[in-house]
Image (cartoon, rainbow, N blue to C red; front, side, top):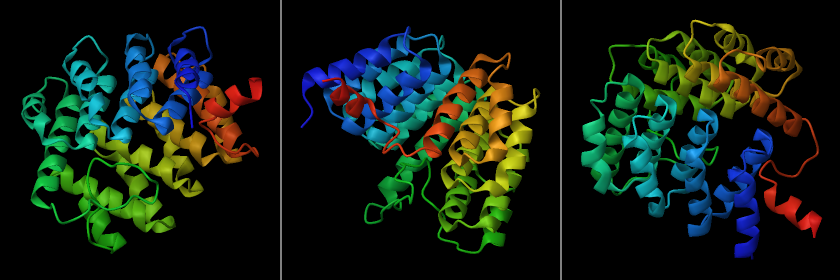
Length: 302
């Protein structure tokens, strides 16, 4: 059992800007794993931070927890136009992940947001909630990566056919996402390379999600494509940041020099993502038991 005091000590690390970003990230993922109202409260407090990357991850974790007690703060973040687009986008996606249809009207309203990444995210969240309502007897599919995804995987199993849908800009974004998650779940180099081709598609939101799933798959075949997107100053910072985190998760020697180089990037979110990715790289190449190690570190101090 975890005590309220232990949750508080981890929460204080998360909200303390004097702590390293890597320590705060590990505290955040510890709180996500612990769950409960106290963890949600500490995560919610951190939305006052200056780091768009951290706030983006706060919203992501609240969505993955699928606890309706996080809904009010996520609604506030989505509605707050002072927040960075990548933070608002993640709040919209998190509301879709929690899955309560009571936010449908709100998400429909923000499906017309002037920020395209926010609008597309809310459109996807609406489609996910409608799919859940229409398919009450079906599961949206268990992710092999234990993630709550913004769309259920397509039922198609042919890599070539899925790739056609994935890369077809005329297809609804929800169907392309379904193809994306089906390819991820199939796995293997052919699926990885099909997904990597999506890094050249039109929507920044779509490209950022491609990078995210490639990071989940941790397959070295996509390192050149992720590296090229991270290196492109013309690319959206939202995409570049996700490419950096994917390279950190893949954690092969071919990723290391790139991450060190772009840890000096002029874009704050890219710099910070590379710092976090280097910490993930170290974790993946170490004998550490878990990345979300806030609780074990506390116990080692006592």
